[in-house]
Structures are given as structure tokens and as C-alpha cells.
Image (tube, rainbow, N blue to C red):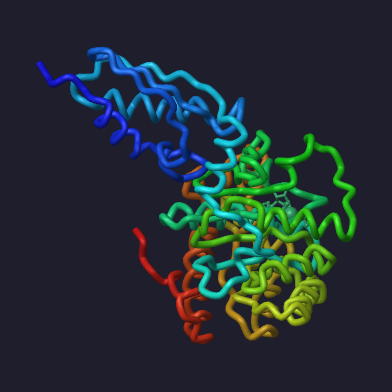
Length: 377
Ligand SMILES: Nc1ncnc2c1ncn2[C@@H]1O[C@H](COP(=O)(O)OP(=O)(O)OP(=O)(O)O)[C@@H](O)[C@H]1O
Ligand SMILES: [Mg+2]
């Protein structure tokens, strides 16, 4: 016979249960209500931050599993309730005391390395590359945020297979997590496929909320999927994320250089350094013959890289699986099928880490980019 389980043991156990979105103990967040122990049976009331929380089943599962492991517990019943406004405000204060800074990523000594993915023209694969790099970085054990700054043409929700709205806790937006990546997109706030018609100041306001009023929780990396070209959004992003480095995506087409160069000019104008160039859609290797076809020409990435005096951090082949994976909502590197494009994307993520670390060393940055070289695995 084991000892009867006491309240203290239960609470201690619950302290190790984390909210999946807030990444904090449910006890510290004030989510645990009444706990009743009746012999080997426990009943726990969990107060969700919002009614209809999309992760309530997961929270319930975490609580049940944690308590069921206690010796002397035979059954666990978890019932759900919703926090009052006061409780919610307190929880919000716990995770993020008074965010009122215009940008948490602009401060000195922030630990997040920000990389904005840019291109001179549309359709070169920025979003696909950004989604895959984010997933590849997260797979190395780093914490990664993905900000979809393509307000008009957002595609990240679909590519990352997210179909739900973002949850708000008080005035704080919670990123939606998929493949280990914390994602925020305008697509989580609007009805699907409804056109976004914000202009100028509204646009800046929306991006500011994405940066400052979103609970990013200090990720190691924040990747930003920019819209094509050098419009208002890019300028706003540069202003909100003044420590960002740009990763320029281009196709191998030499004629694309003029447009890609525009991205480089933007980098100059907004005073963001370029970390490197990534060539996408570099040749198609026929799976049956192994013959390589340079569908979009060749040499564009190399040429742009040398023009910018920055490294070519990768060449991602043109491969139908990249598009198929994106359409299916599972980025290719997460599908784990060992395709040449998936390998190239993982290689590019590694190279990106190296270049960011080198850049930080060259800048003599104390800490801010330095951790990128740390091996967390
Ligand atoms: N390496 C690749 N091989 C095959 N298809 C690809 C590859 N990279 C991207 N694609 C496909 O090309 C199309 C455009 O890609 P994506 O949407 O990522 O580009 P983008 O630069 O973000 O476009 P936009 O400028 O509209 O934001 C998508 O259908 C995508 O699936
Ligand atoms: Mg895009």
C-alpha cells in the first residue's frame, strides 16, 4: 500500500506542468483552481486563459499524465473553466510584465538573432525557404520565431499547416506553434482568404503589434518573411527590427540580378547588413536519369553574392516536393524524406548559423549574435 497522496505532492507535480503556448508553469500562471484528493482519486480544476482555448485537450492531457504518474493515484479527473478578467490580466503580467516597448528586439543585449528574408522580385521561394529554414533551425534545439510580414500576400499559415486563429491573452497575442516554430501571421487574425486592405499607418500598426504585442518569449532566432521588393512593409520591419540581418533569396537567372540587387539596395537604405545569398530553384535533377537541367539558368546566386561581397549560403534545387510539401502544410525538411532539396535546406540552415556567428564576431557584438555558434544539441 502506498501512502495517501497529499495536496502538496499534487501541487508540486503540477508546478512542472507547462502551458504549451505560454511556456510557463500552470501553477505560476494561476491556472490551477481547486484540487481535491479523495483516496486514490484526484480532481483538478484547470482555468484556461481563454474560453475555447485550442490547446485545452493538450493541457488536460499534460495534467492527467503528470498526476497519473504519482504513486498512489489511480484516477485523475481534470475539469476546465475559464479565468476571470482579473486572473487573465495577472497571467498576462506573469509572462510578460508590461510590454510597452515599441520593439522588444531593438533593445541592447537582446538574445534573439533576427534574420529578415528578402528578395527583389516575387515568387522566388522566399516563404518556402523561410518556413524550411525555421523548421530546420528548430530541429537543432534552438527556439525559433517566424514572423510573416507579408501582410498582403501571406502564405506562411498554409505552408506551416496552421488553420487556427491566434489566441489573445488580454492584449497579448500568442504565436501559433507548428513544427517547433512560434509563428505569427496576419492570416491568424483575418478570415481565410479575405483580402487585407490596410494601408500606410495601419500597416505599420499591424506590424508593430506583431513585433511588440506578440508573446515571442525571447526565441534564439526570429525569421521574418518579407513581401517581395522594397515597399513600406520592409521599411517598417527595418525600423522595428533594427538589429536584423538580411538573407537575400534569388533564382539562378542572371536577369533576376537586377531585381535581386534592389533588395541589396534596400539593405543599404535601411542600413541592415546582408548575411548571405541563397539561390533557390537551382537546377532540376531528373530523378530517373540524374541529369541536371538548369531550368532557370545558372550562376545568379554566385554573381549576386560576389557583388554583395557576401557568401552564397546555399543552392536549393528545383524539386516538385518543395511545392508539394508547402501545399500540404508540412515543410519539406519536416517531412524528413531525405530529398536533395531537404538536404540542401538543412545545409543552408547550418551555413546560415555559421555566417551569423561570423558576422557577430566581426561586429564585436557582445552576446547578441554570439550564441548562434553554440551547440545546443
Ligand atoms: N526549390 C523549389 N522547387 C520547387 N518549387 C518551389 C521551390 N521553391 C519554391 N517553390 C514553389 O514556388 C512557388 C513560389 O514560392 P514562394 O511562395 O515560397 O515564393 P515567394 O518568394 O515567397 O513568393 P511571393 O513573392 O509571392 O511571396 C510556390 O508554389 C512554391 O511551392
Ligand atoms: Mg512569400
